[in-house]
Length: 387
Ligand code: SF4
Image (cartoon, rainbow, N blue to C red; front, side):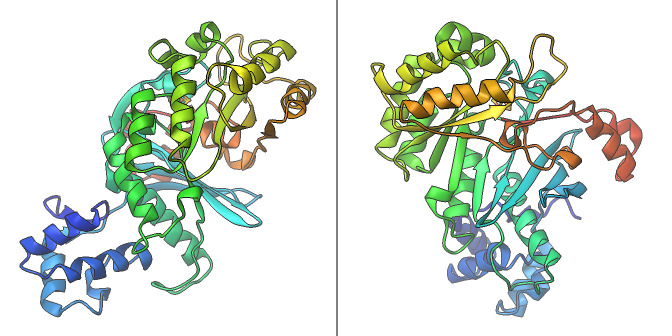
């Protein structure tokens, strides 16, 4: 592929109009192009049959539709499907599809690596490499949606939507890659692209307070917050970003967000760590934090059984402890769920999304096995996990 070509995959409607202008084409062509790309999954311009032949010729010469290349593609016995994607320069990201009875959820990554460095997260241990572009973020949805349709033998350009929900809960902190994440979110919501409801698109953050306010103003979607602790000293250790934006600030930001949010609650994610944040006293402190503190927040709690990474002192809470913790929250009237683990047989966790964080060194082996690149390059790939 000619590197000089312009990748249109992450272009907003306005950017597509501008691009058509550079080709001396009318603005309405942008709408047609956007539908071919995002509604029909067509990447070959010759197949865009309602575009004038002359325009198709120009697009073939100067443009391309390019998502990150798939390195590995595995489907679990429970239907969970996971892709490992190459985003260049020794970086790979993961995208996970989780089918359920009444919905299909895609977990997407927003950064290669992560600078937040949460104590329990192997992505954080690998450091930050770079922000993904809007094309690389929306490219995960584009790639997955049309791969799922093809798997059901739906003809190109036709077929029922497979992905009903998207969570930005993969690798990285989406609010540290704000502009690209919001560009991708807008395409997810755009009726001329994926047309997802705001209620079905979730941004998960470790607590970047100023950007929570900005998201509320610019693109309010459902919000999940990786809480994991009930007081500042503990959260300072588990989620180092807390030292910059402590709990009172974070809770106040959550409350402000609710004025704009498409749902009337914030989802708090809480990774259950044996003996660290899982006692009855922690559960009661959590109730006080969200219900009776200076900034009570309408919320749901999602308890996530931790799966070990090689980190001394960190263990998953027992099922009994998780149940006892959940009961205290439920008795206080807080809607509380315990996240199910999915796709274990393919190591498919989108980090905490699927309740798993595993040693990602196997990513290197898989890339080597795939034969898509020399082992010497594969060894430089960073392994990863996610929020
Ligand atoms: S849990 Fe999320 S925010 Fe924390 S280090 Fe991992 S990827 Fe980053």
